[in-house]
Length: 226
Image (cartoon, rainbow, N blue to C red; front, side, top):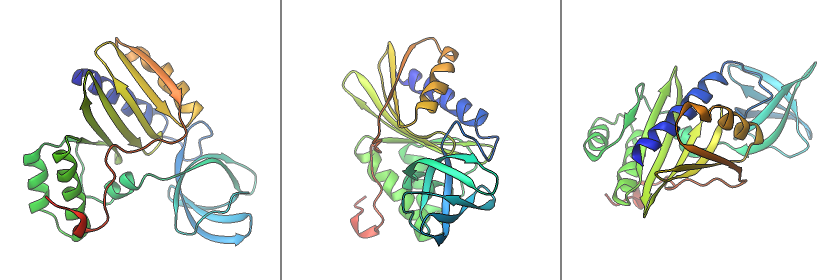
């Protein structure tokens, strides 16, 4: 089953790469950060390296990051399907890791001992605590577009959670004969189905609004017992 986990990882990585080329993309969720409120329905947001104006009927929180579907208009960009940006991916993007890593205990402890600040130490301490709960982490770095995957063995299947900058959050179940995926976005579901012929196993994709991490990181060293 673990080999099937790496197969789906390959599909997710390739889909993320192919659809992360354009800064304005109406098909998939991308990261936005709210810079300031201009008026009750207009905001300035950071989109890639640019700052642009957007309109939203839903109140946005200043300083907060979201996944959103973005469509370019004449004088502004239109955003829809907002979901809170993954706190886990946001933490990973601040950690100086430039290679793909499947973290075992030895690698985690090495990163802990080499941590250069409190946030980096806290990040890897969380990963060590997750490992004690039999939850494993994989870091993925594709042309500086970082992604993260969590997985655990559960009886006769593997449960996993993954988050990609240009796909959003995905969770799923893997058995020896089938992979079941869940995403909040219909367009992402379509892309995953279209790319499923990359591997020789049945894949089903469903829409699910609330995608949850297998292990939620704590923000305090006090809460960590390793």
